[in-house]
Structure formats: C-alpha cells, structure tokens
Amino acid sequence: MKRQLVQLTLLLRVLDPPLCDYLDSKESGSLCFCFRWILIWFKREFAFSEVLLLWEVLWTELPCPNFHLLVACAILDAERQALMHSGFGFNEILKHINELTMKMSVEEILCRAEAIYRQLAATPNALEHGPGTDPASPPPPPWLKVPSSPF
Image (cartoon, rainbow, N blue to C red; front, side, top):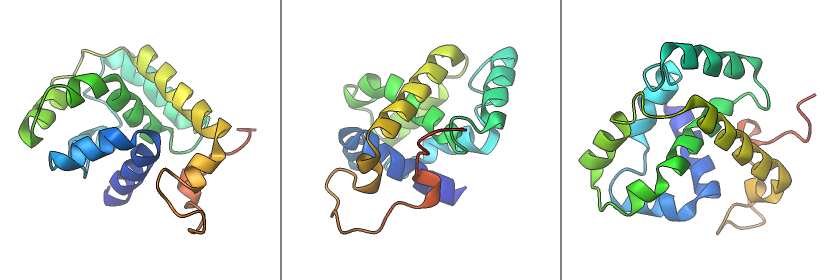
C-alpha cells in the first residue's frame, strides 16, 4: 500500500504540481485519504454495478497495469477546484473525499483516467523528467512508464 501511495504521489506530482503543493501545504501530501481507494479498488465509491464495470476495466490491465492509479488521479482532477478553492485543512479534505461516495459517475471518471493516460503517452518526457526535475535524473521506475502501445 505504501508503495502504491508513493507511486500515486509521484504521478500526481507530474500531472498537477499545484494540486500537490496545495495538498502538501494542508498536510495531505501523503494522499492518505486515497488509501481506501487503492485498498479496495474504489468498491465504496460507486454503486455495485458501476464497481463491476470499473473492476472489469482494471482487470484487463489496459491501457496499463496501474490504471487504478490513473483512476485515482482522475477523481482528484474532478475534485481539484473543490479542494483547492475551499480552504480545507487535513480533516476537511479527508471528509470531502469520503463524502464523494456514490456521488461520482464511473463513466466520467474512466473517461478522465483514459484522457490522463493519453496525455502521459503523448508526452513521455513528462514521466521521465517531471516538472522541476533534473534531466540527468534516472529514468522513471517501470510502473510509471507508459507503453507506446497496449498491444
């Protein structure tokens, strides 16, 4: 779990540095509020029929094996404005995320996650050298690499 939360943090840092900075400033940079999402693969976030659809997508491991991390990023992207413009502290962020249960559309989140995947696939250098990183830094770990083709 810890490894996946670290991976999610690194991924979000590449995708949305201002959101990461905001969460860091509110002592939420560890993304501990995403723990439940990763632990039970969003089982409590959506209706049963939607969870089955989501799990079928995740089981295919397409477009990438860690697509569940992109789903988490998609949810955070959908809630970005609410989080950043609310003045929420640690407890309020946790409460807000927990209150998303049954209030999201799995189709919308999957579309956002796929768009994030396509964004990363189109800009592979963003993964290798995220914002503010040294171009001489080592390549990204295998879990973060986006294959050029899922086939």
